[in-house]
Amino acid sequence: MSPLLLSLLLSRRNEDLTKLRIVPPVYISVIVAVYAFLVILGIPSYGTAPTYAAAVQQQSFLFGIIGAMMFATAGAYEDIAAIRILGRSADSESIYFEKIRVFKDIEEVKAHLSVPHIRKALSLKVRVNGDAKSGYIMHSERQADMTTIIRLEKDSELETNTVIKIAFYERGRYSVSFSKYFLELASRDSAYLLQSLADAQPSLPSEVVVPLINKSNDIFMNYVIDDLRGYLVATKKASPLSILLGVASIILFLTTAIAITSGQPTYIDEAAGAVTGLTLILLVIDVIRKSD
Image (cartoon, rainbow, N blue to C red; front, side, top):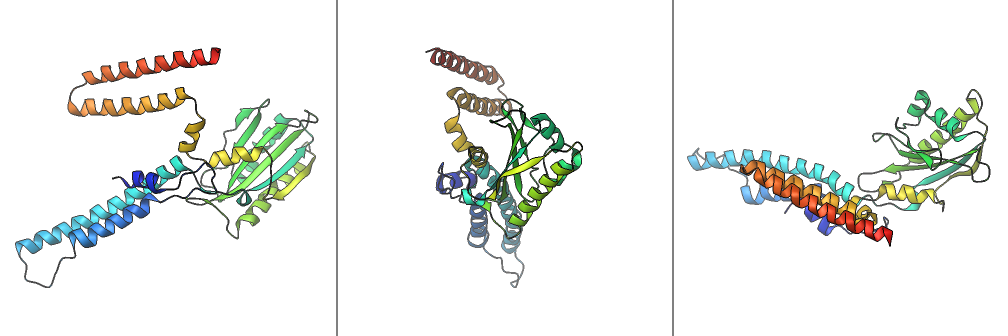
């Protein structure tokens, strides 16, 4: 059985990320590789007189080393898949939150944070999601030292003002971690953001509404937690159409691959027809359900 499948079966899956526990596929791969290396293959003896059997054993041993290394390497990639499927464990106290009010329009604040040197200093991606009405979301780059998520929204009290909500957390391999340097980095980026607003031309006057804390009930924290969830939890919130389309795509891909490798491409048309039929049926059901 694949280390990834074993990981999905053995891991403690839970929508509450504080209770999520992942059994890493790479650990399973290493254990299996070591077992195969030492128990199944065995260590050849180099002190005896060379024989055909000994040569075969030594050759098998060398190929076994290569195979074990490849198996363990594959486990490292399956680790990534397991994290994407299951998510990362986290608790709210590992995520720091700050809220700032800027006395300027949301588009001006967005343009300011999109200035290349400011964006790079905060390790933010070029892409900005959302719009002025629903709010903008800015994410840090994947390779950044810590994860930063910034939300810009119009102030509910005065729409000409902008509220900046910021979440900082340190992303470990399987969970949200907390190193001794994290809080220092978060405080540094928070101070830089405030200073950049003050130094802007024209100035973007601001005030800190909620200082940097690790306990917040702001609704924005739900988005941050959802961002840490895996596909397994996300599919529970997805519509039946989305789930079936995903499953249908996988079935179509596998059927196409089998048809091509087996030299019987006529199966492709049959698979495509079946997937299309299922999708149309679900579309009709979805339309009827929404019209009720």
